[in-house]
Length: 102
Image (cartoon, rainbow, N blue to C red; front, side):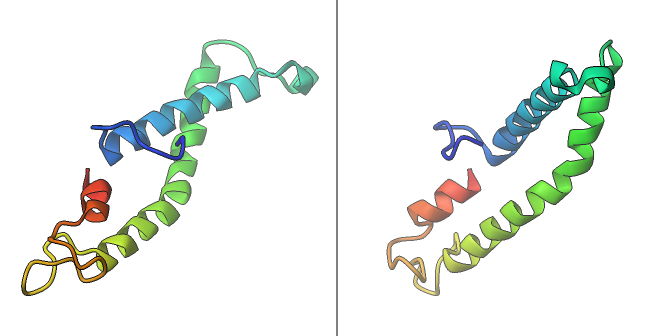
């Protein structure tokens, strides 16, 4: 991910986009001329790259999703008993909770 999300995009869309970029990078890596005789080519490269990124995805997503979960604990979307964010003190959902839930 680029560090910030496009306005209006959802987390799921961002993760899917990151997956696509990961597959593209894996394809480029497998076809890199610097690999010499280990370099891969052909239509199977795309399938191999997708499989590699798909296999790695849970290990990459888990830390991110854990952090997002922690953010929602600190900034509960429903707020406290009077409807205020327990961290920010602003009306719930605060801007942080809104950004994480999009």
